[in-house]
Length: 129
Image 1 (cartoon, helix red, strand yellow):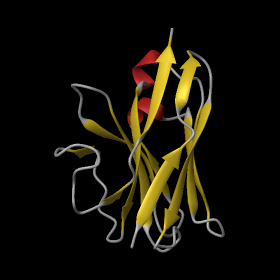
Image 2 (spheres, one colour):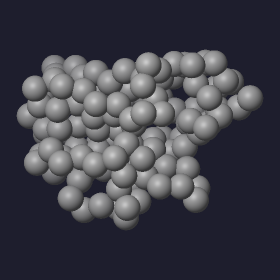
Image 3 (cartoon, rainbow, N blue to C red):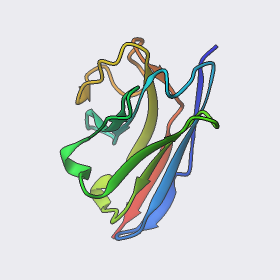
């Protein structure tokens, strides 16, 4: 059974940093396409970053230069380092896995709901000014 568990969220002031972790079981992070999405109340489920099987990375326009995705294959863990956090980064952040590899910029059904992906439960990030 595939299981994804996010951690590392919390409250931080603008300009601060957080590192989110996604611990996986039932899959290998280097054999799947892994991604981070986020969703705030009233907003779309937005792609933050993804890392493909070959290590290629993609970042959403709103986080380019501030976010770094990485993976530790031995630990089956994917990380998202976020720097220079801003209030607009406030959202629930979700880890997602897609064995096929067709991540899109937006998930219209909402984070955690699209059955084509495996999802974690989400971790809250709150950035205050």
